[in-house]
Length: 399
Image (cartoon, rainbow, N blue to C red; front, side, top):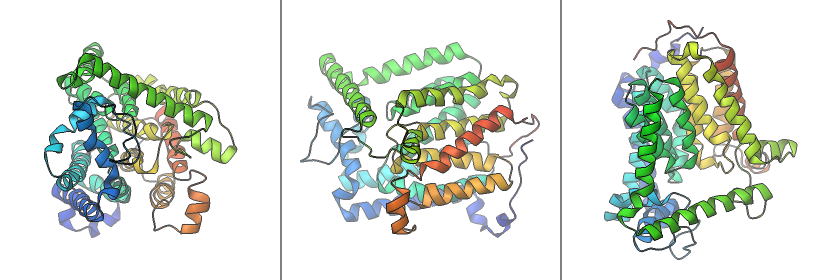
């Protein structure tokens, strides 16, 4: 049985933080503070955002989105042609203001996603405080990952509210930003109206796929998608062969097996095995109406998206950490929960930061993909519990 317990420490928390607005202010202040820091440091600090911002100009000028533009930014544009169109409204503003809005928008999306979950304000505050360092890390790297995680949660919430059309929209939106978000599509197995959902997914996918036609010819759109697929496959091949890899040591099951055990099986086999394990709990149909069971499923999906991602990097790990926090406030509070939460906090959240001893970080944390290990361990624990725990159908999480 999963029992909701109130921590004694809650009585020491300032009352304003326990209000709904408390969590909002934490995210917005953190986001605004990071945005100001980035703008003061200059374009090199927000190179990722310059990649986003420049993509729209490249798209409407019929330029290849996926080649190097060293005179504009470092690295490559790795997102869909549609994402280049979605960023368009922000490009009307001064660059410094775009960065501030982008950071605050990420923070608001994460806050609102947490707000919509069937949790108490204390549980939401606990999630916020636990993930705050990781969220700041993602914001300092001007990532899209916080927004993608929020969209996956939005999809879950709209499934719960029987708003299948909107659930399908957010899954497709997230996928056209980061392909790994497609894993969230398996949520539909928990709910009725499956055929309707499939039709909605097809509708939204077609709409997003064809959206660049608003500014490009069909031939140019096909060219962009061809380039995107080609770049994605070449990155995957680089990771498999070790020749010019995009991420030297991916923070995934694949990176963990390689650095700890010198095992390097094809990523696709590991990902297929991970997908099979992810799907196994869906056989327990008797718990489809249990909110704890479904929140465990949501947590497992968010963590899966990182630990089975062949190019997972530290700056994107907020997706997995949000999954961890959902598990943390949902599971019963015992020694195992506490131990796993501490492991994640120290090794996955704190270890890559300047708060961790530099020598240990350089010689152990980075070379051995230590950041990934607690999340991998926790994911297997969640899957085990999903498969063997007797979820009490009387459990209700109070909002």
